[in-house]
Image (cartoon, rainbow, N blue to C red; front, side, top):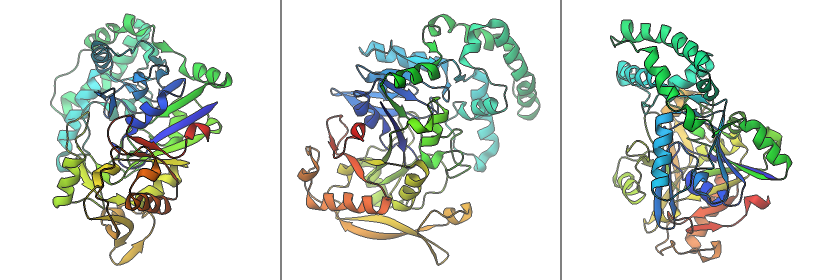
Length: 429
């Protein structure tokens, strides 16, 4: 039995899809425990590029059963558009299972998300407008709609009418928008019922039975540590807990069953949306990382903000998630740049912070303190072992290990599944 949690160690877009795709071929189940179609993964398999938004990357595995856990919020239209798109390209999504306790995104959640962001103006959070936050808000307020409700029209109608009784007041009186007809929402959900029914299961029971039988599970977190609603750069965060602890809550698998916690981290740093970002670059190197790294959001099309590796963030993520291993991605992007700065601490008004400032204002005003290391000029995209890497690349990885308080077990040297160096096998941990 093995339970591996894959967690983004920065602000997302670190390459979790590639890591999950590689490890997904070695496990029996791949579970997405949080998030929705507001974040995505790019996976390259057999020369084919797949951009996944809601589905776990494990859906491309030939053997693993992909599962959307109870902590996910599911946009049904987006779900089936993605499934149909994959199947049109020859991929098989028929094994997909969805927790009956997963909440669903209603059209009114998307409307509220967009109007609220516009209303906030300069104070906007920078959401994707896909209704993820309002859906989680309804979940916590206990007025949400779960997957299982779709199969009982009476309960579904009661819940929709109850939710819209308040939301229509807000839309009409506060935002000067048209009220939403509850019948349209009920019909929307019921239109998916027949196709959904074979997929919806008591996922928590199935997963724990599988573990009791000695099977293996990989939990693929969406977003990342610094976007965690509790541990991230609040309020510029997502609405769920994309940390290792959140994976347990969002899957129904207890924390004592986790065998490895794998942090996915870029050899530099990126961020999408608003919020503080100490190592962000506004010069030619920021443009270089954005262009060379192909730093454009899979799901949103937004350019990612780019900066150098932040070891303060890395240490924080390692501590919060209890990382056993790191997967460093996009090391090849740094080839030939001369010198590589690494943020080792922050300066805030003359005071040095070696760890994350507890005060949000301090973090917002933090200036990175850098040390530099020489880059390598050799092409590393064909390297298949750590020893094949140039000495300077190996030195860089060793320094990241020291600064991040965690061993590096995998290194990405290109976008393809095969362009990955394995140093330690987390399945054997």
